[in-house]
Image (cartoon, rainbow, N blue to C red; front, side):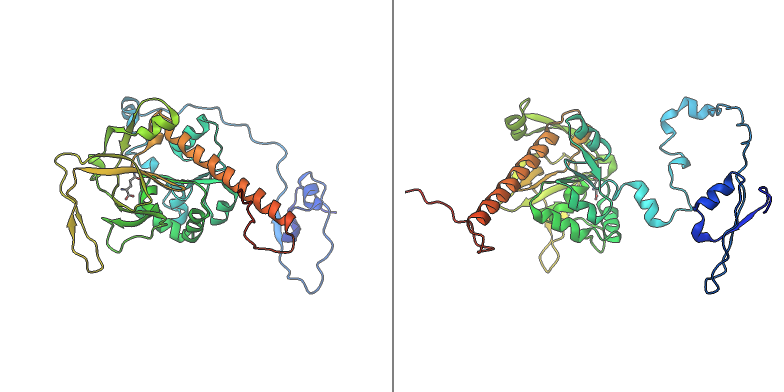
Length: 353
Ligand SMILES: NC(=O)CC[C@H](N)C(=O)O
C-alpha cells in the first residue's frame, strides 16, 4: 500500500466516495482499475493536513481619517459599492436590483423597505428571480428601480410572458414607481427604441413626469380610500423619486390619489406616435395612485414611510382574491359532485321564486 502522505489518484466521478473520505484520514485504499473502455482521466487528491496553521491574530482595520469623518460617503461614491469588474452582465445585474427585487408574496416580498414593511404587518415575502417561481406565490409586487434596465433584465430572464400570465390570473399585483410603468398598457417619455411593458393597467404613464433625480420631492397626498379602509388620516406622505405619473386612465380604473403638477416644472410633450399629433400636458393635477381590479399602482414609494396602510390595503386584496379562489373551488367541487358526467358545464345555480 501507498504512504498516506503521498498524492492519491482517483477517478473524478468518485471524488466523494468513501474511499476518498478515508484518504483524508490517511487510510488510503486504491480504487479498482478502470474498465478498459472508460476514459483514463485521473485527478490528484492531496491529503488534507491534520494540523491547521494557527490563525493570525485579528488586527482591526484602521479606518481612514476621511472615512471616519465622512462615514456617509462610504457606500455612496466609494468604488467599493461597484460590482466586481470580473462579473458577467447578468450576474452584476442580479446584484443590483432586478429581478431579485421583483418581489412577490405568499403574501409578498422582499425588497428593501417593501419587505420590511410587509414583515411588520405579518406578511411573508419571497424574492422572485425566475419565471417558475411565480407559480408558487399569491400576490406580486413589482417595485421601483429604473424601468428601462428592469425591462432589459426581465427580457434577459424571459420573465415577461410569465408576468403577463400572472397579472391575467387575477391575483393581486402592486407596482410602485418603475413597477407602475411596467404595469401600464402604454408609456410615454421612454428612451429611444421604447421598452417592453407587462401591461394590464389601462392607462398611459409618463416615465419621468416629475423630472430627474434632482426634482425628487415629498408631499402630503389626499387619499380618502386609505382612511375609509384602514382608518387614520385622510392623507398620506408621498415620496416621489424620479417619479412617473399617470396622464390618462380607462373607465375601469379607480383613481385613488392625484397631486398638483409642481410649479415651474417644464411642460411635458406627449409623443403619441402612430401618426397622432404630439400633445402638451396642460392639466394642473396629475394622477399618482390607481386601482383596477387586481392591480394596485402607486407612482410614489409607500415603503419609505412608516405608514403601512398601503401595504394593508394590498394584503386585503390578497385575502379577497384567496377568498374568491376558494369560493370558485368549492362551487366547482359541488357542481362536480352533483353532475359528475357533465364536465365544463356552467354551475347550475338555484332559482328563487
Ligand atoms: N423610483 C423609480 O422607480 C423611478 C422610475 C423611473 N422614472 C423609471 O423610468 O423607471
